[in-house]
Image (cartoon, rainbow, N blue to C red; front, side):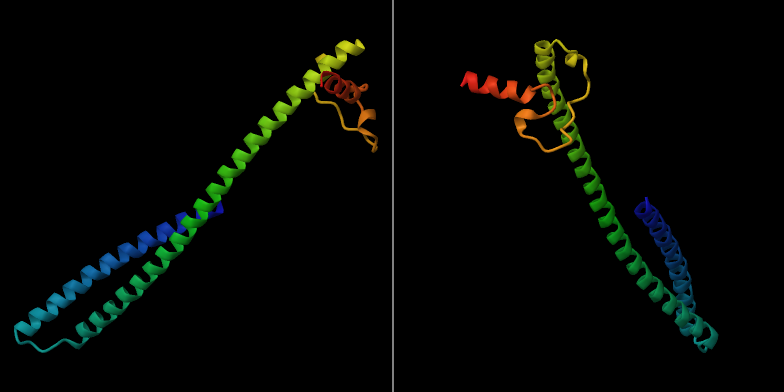
Length: 160
């Protein structure tokens, strides 16, 4: 959100500088035209007009430098926004994949629980949560789940 706010501020400032450059450039052209007309008519140069002309030229140059700075700042913020959007997109993909993995594991553990429930006569098939991990370190064949690991291992060894 802060990047988008910064982008909006820079964009607004760039538009304001553009408007000032345009206004100053129009006035500069008018003063230059008046100076040429006075020179063509043989009138002496107006010192005040020449000073104003020099000041406007300086202002236009300063504004153009500021406009370039703003353009560079906008490019940096645009790149940061793009990088942030890519990061968010990747995180969403990782989250979606993780969610699918968890759902897949949950389905697998639920199907094992349903088999165990049928064998034990318990209501494991009605459970919507996967079995909890053991609280203490124990051999894999003594884990929580009513000997589920032992039965699972015996199924695989007997079918092999």
